[in-house]
Length: 93
Image 1 (cartoon, rainbow, N blue to C red):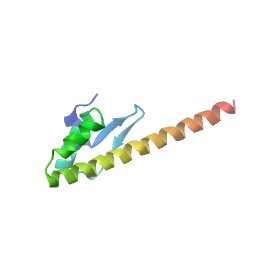
Image 2: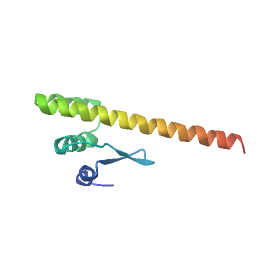
Image 3: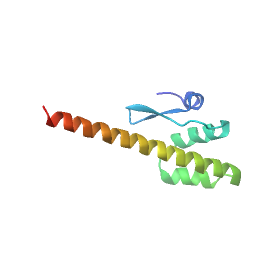
């Protein structure tokens, strides 16, 4: 498993063990926020952290959180597509 520092430099996150989730275009502060959010366990911890931030940083954190959710949802859709293809392949055996 990569360290948070390696994640920050690459902008990449492991998702579901199948591929790497990559969020492009983050500035240094946003990458740091993303590293903190990825290490948290659960929605309550994430929201508590975000609500503890000052206004400008809080805006960045919400943007990063939305980007992370979108990236994970995209990964889930990709996995669902792969599962459907595999089911179709198995049906045709």
